[in-house]
Image 1 (cartoon, rainbow, N blue to C red):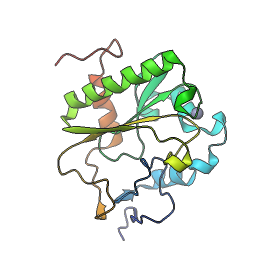
Image 2 (cartoon, helix red, strand yellow; image 1 turned 90 degrees about the vertical axis):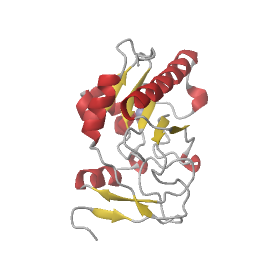
Image 3 (spheres, helix red, strand yellow; image 1 turned 120 degrees about the horizontal axis):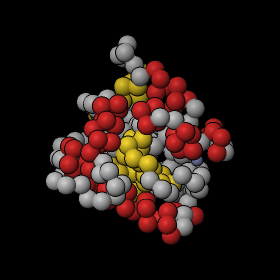
Image 4 (tube, rainbow, N blue to C red; image 1 turned 60 degrees about the horizontal axis):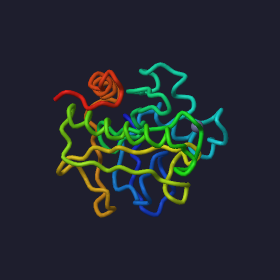
Length: 199
Ligand SMILES: [Zn+2]
């Protein structure tokens, strides 16, 4: 359709179209993919066979700007989802390449929880969402795009921002670039990592 990118049509019964499908709910959004993102999609889940090919293991080796990381904790880090459902869609990942929530130890579990709370506080401060979707998709059957490396979704929601139910196929407009969002969220992240930012 558009010449600036390819329209990915929402087809509830189609193959997974990106790496971060949420909890088994077919994606009702259409997206305008940019070429570099399309290249990323082609290198999707089936290529994540080890830590060497895992994007969540690779991300911390890059700069924050390159990896879209907004905060690096001791056991876990926070980065923007390359395939956001909304502007500010964050992922909280342990550094360790483990697939399952039962694989993280107490310290990792505690930090993932704290970073999730801080992510919500930061997003509220930055962009005033009125709701959130939080969750971890476990296994490819559970909807995880990168099933091999645990990641918690933090998706900010606003009234009228769309609908996760596959009722209406619509084009999802992401109005800010990922780089702009990363800068805003990183700047608002509290300097001590997980404390509540001053309001
Ligand atoms: Zn990994």
